[in-house]
Image 1 (cartoon, rainbow, N blue to C red):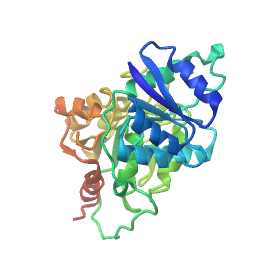
Image 2: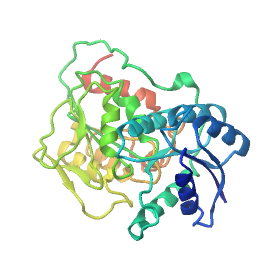
Image 3: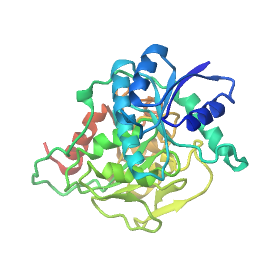
Length: 347
C-alpha cells in the first residue's frame, strides 16, 4: 500500500486528489496539510511513502516546504500545480531543484469524462514516484541566487559541434546544474530531451534560462542549429537532426513508451555528427537513451552517463553503462567542467 500525504490549501483540491488517488486500491491517503509548515509536521509524524505538494500556499510555500522535508525526513515529493500560472511554475521548478522528484499538472474538471487520461496520469505518476530513492539534502548543497562568474579564457577551435542530453526523473535539477556552470562563450550547440508533463516545457526553458548564460528555447521544426544555443524538445514531439543540420520534429510512435525519446535524438546525432558529438544520459527511470548513446559511442563520439550516487533514479544511466555505451561515468557536478575541458580545450 502506498501511503500519501496531500498538501494543498484548497479543501476542494484535497478532496479531489484523495478521490482520484484512492480510486486505485494500492494508494491510501493518510493525511492532509494546508500549508508548508503543516506539511513538515505531518511528514515527520506520518512518515508517508509520498507527498503531493501544492506550490503557492500561505505561511510557507512549496519550495521551502520541500527543502525542509528533504533535509529532515526525506520523502518523494510530487509537485501538483498548473502550467497556466507563471509564479507557480517558478516555485514548482525551484522545488525540483530542492529535491522534489516530479511536477505534474493539477487536474482541471477532474471528474469530467474527458479527464480520464489526466486522472490516470496522476495515479501512474504517484505509483512510480513512490518507488524513487531519495536522500537527505543539506540547504547549502542547493543552488540559489545569481549565476557564479566564470573566467573567460582563450580556447582552441573545437572539434565538438554538438552536445546531446537525455534526462527524465530528476532531470530538471541536473540540467540546471550543468547549464548553469557553462560559460557564455561555450561554442557547441546543445540539444535536450527531457521527459516532463505536457504543458511544462516552456516553463522549464524559462526556469533554466535564469542560471544559464547560453540562450535557451524550445526547438522548432526546420530551425538551423546554431553554435552556443540550447534547444529543448517540445511537448509530445520527437526531436532529431537532419543531414543539413536542421532540427526535425515528428509525432511518430512512442519509443521506450515516451515521446520525445532520447534514443531518437541520439541516433540522429550519431549519424549526422559522428565523432563531433558528445552524448550525455542523465538521471531517469527506464532505459530510454541507452541504445542511442551506444549509437553515438559507436560512431566515434564521446558519451557520458551520470553516476549512481548523484542520480535521483539510476535507471537510464545504468542501462547505458550495462550496454557498454559510456566513454565515462561522472557525478552531476563534474559534467560541465568535463564539457568545458573537452569542447573548449581549457584546463
